[in-house]
Image (cartoon, rainbow over all chains, first blue to last red; front, top):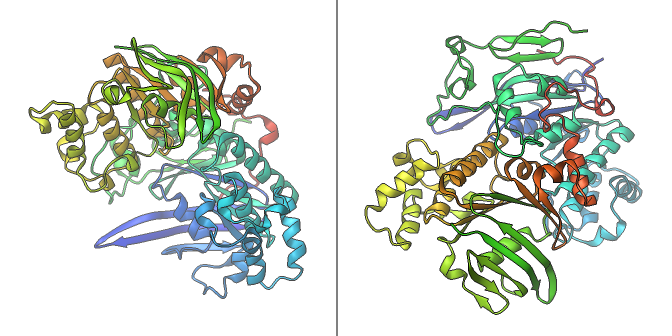
Length: 316
Length: 279
């Protein structure tokens, strides 16, 4: 099967003064039709930059971006129109993502207008029903809506052009637990009904665990680990993933947090390491870590870029 | 050290009842968790205990007692006397709680100064920054908030919060804006400070797992009332209120949160990868 989206050795550098920050530093991944891939990592790991590159909002500095095997890297905005339509972003905070002066009707109609779609009125009502919003809201403005309703509007805008991929950047970070539950259920339903493919960026590991079949762990622009979500989270290969997972609050462990793998604290971060970038914080660092880390295949389809990752072979 | 007791607290905002009879007890040296969604009244309860209610809000009934002193009743507000030294509070967004144009060391000094410790302020403030786990505190003291990470800012705010050795520390979503690793570090720090100083702590969070992990007892708030209260272990294992049950069920869906690393996820949510990623 052809991947819907494939990135190969994607890079995005930002220059500030004489310094270069490698926000995304050689990421390769493929999104297969209908799957949900999660991207986790701490803030500053490059998750959002990766999302912005994949949705065409940032131009990568290097590497390639393919959509259904067609290279879309470095195309002009005009040439990317069809791609933008097929790959839609949903951002973290709908209040800043939605024009506050527009009504919900204007907001949802805008993409249809831009792409010259016919039958806009019917599509508008269809999509409202899809995301579970009442058409009573159409004349309101974003600030009149609750956080959950606003995020539904943002999702409606994203799916109204019938895209094949949604790139969701922390879509539930600004809402309550019960709202989060409802939004996740909505995303699951939309995926089932429309065969959508999701790239799901989040720092909330439990949400990714619940939502995504496959997970990518990023650390400072690089891929630390990737594989089936259950395998990555339950038998992590990379020490960084172990650190992340062990920091999740444990229930049924009333006080204290025993068994947590802690990072070492650091002050100045050396940005120009050719070896593993996690080494300065790694609680288990070895001399070997100064060299570029090997990519270990923990199990088929589950890989980790860590000296300490063990290949477990095929279990079944 | 004195404990904090809230009894039958009722608060209305512009005549609308928002806190409808809250009882809460934080004993010295213990940590009590307060869980609920936004709008359930968690923060308002905390703010009332410090006399920081927004305009239009009014205490209609009940009382807040610190040690054996009544500090808040419908016709009494003695919070000014205990604010900082009796009860201190830290907030969700550490960057917003700090003054952006003052070096962080100076901000800690100002808290100390107000509390009368005039000798060698700089030395004490640097020591306090070290106490909250900041490396190279002399260096950090000279930095501005924007030069610090979110986790470091929260440590500075905690240093300011405990500067006058409060009996009770109220932490309102202290880790919500932080990464999971930093969250665990900050919660560890709060645990450590509590056991070192013997202060009581009220930990407010929307995340039941944070509270259940860190607090011996938990109160679940909903619509301005305590829906359920009890020992964390009991609430987690046999929640009595449907709302709590829902929260617990949510957490139970996550094997990672249950600390059962070898347990696979429920199969109905599992989607097998169709092909491994390109490399």
